[in-house]
Length: 86
Image (tube, rainbow, N blue to C red; front, side):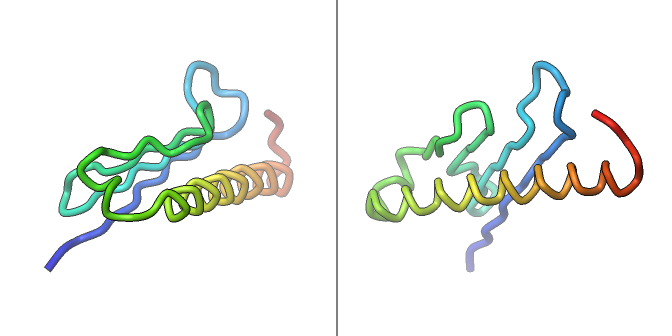
């Protein structure tokens, strides 16, 4: 049996010195990937990189970019809904 967790951190736009979006993937508690809005690409650990094709990891990168957009859009919408500014 294995466990797979994805941890997402998103902050409201305008927070300095911290990416607006970060994602970390954990397999059995060990980190295997990292993504941030600053670099907009996946950093994949060597031990798992070989288990999937390059096209798989490209699609995972696109999924993280989509997640980044969704989180950012959700924050922006919530801020407008509750009359908060950046």
